[in-house]
Image (tube, one colour):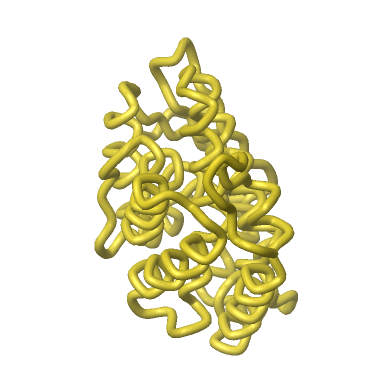
Length: 227
């Protein structure tokens, strides 16, 4: 795909989603994580993150352009895993900068996207702007059974067990004031405390992200509010 030139339409999510280089990095990054034993980070994950980021900003009535940038950031946020799982947010931001620059993204919009990507991993993340906040919420709430690659329950580690235990997962924005993650967990597979053991830092980050967007964060497990 050739870069955009002055006077042409701005870079779109469809441009990014169809770009062969970006698709290759996403697929290869997921293969690398599979080799390392991590849960699924495939096109299914990044597409879901893009869709939820869109839902968040659209519901809160952000501009169409900010929504488009959030979708792009959501789709590209995990490409850094092709380099290494460690500091993948930062390496992914550097990769995204080059790819988006080649596609003709403006410096201002490129800056928004790469700052969101570079701030999505809970070890170093912070919701530095609305796009970053939407990306954090969309990414950290993608908890589902289908992300578990290992199908041998007897060999599950705690991450496999917690994700596999999630039978249903829904995100909802209530009155533009509350971002709610609602989970149905099979406690015979994983107790609720195991969920908090591995996801507490992510949920605290979600609280910060929701606050940035003018909301509070609420976690409901098996119809009980727990956070």
